[in-house]
Image (cartoon, rainbow, N blue to C red; front, side, top):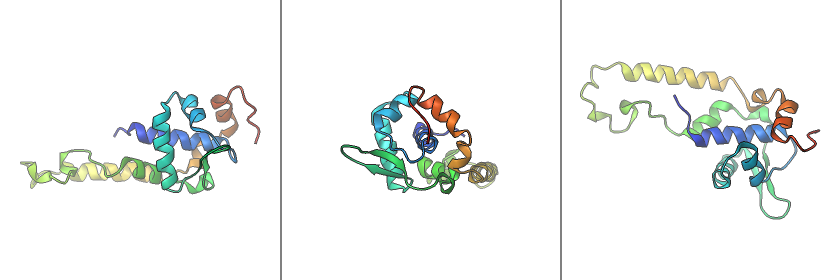
Length: 149
């Protein structure tokens, strides 16, 4: 399974903010840290804010920060939210009646089992687990700034 760029960017933004606890980051800063287009970061930050994982503040002194402790942000939940309903094969789509072998095919069951295992693995981790080397990560993302908490 390949994650969308939106999911990739969402996880990166969350990791960045978790590596800099208590600090508000601006869109330009996030985009520069990962070489992403600012308009993509805006969409990601907006979505993560609506989902309740970020607090977004507009205007002077604004930016974005985590809305809760990273241990409360499950990776599986983020991936499910950003990926939407999985369509691993045509038989997962709403129009699966188009498949000529659907009544005898076991592929859907096998793929469904694999998807369940995929999400079960992600559900074992929180955002905090991804930033256990927070200071090293912070130095890599902001090499010219002071990264002390």
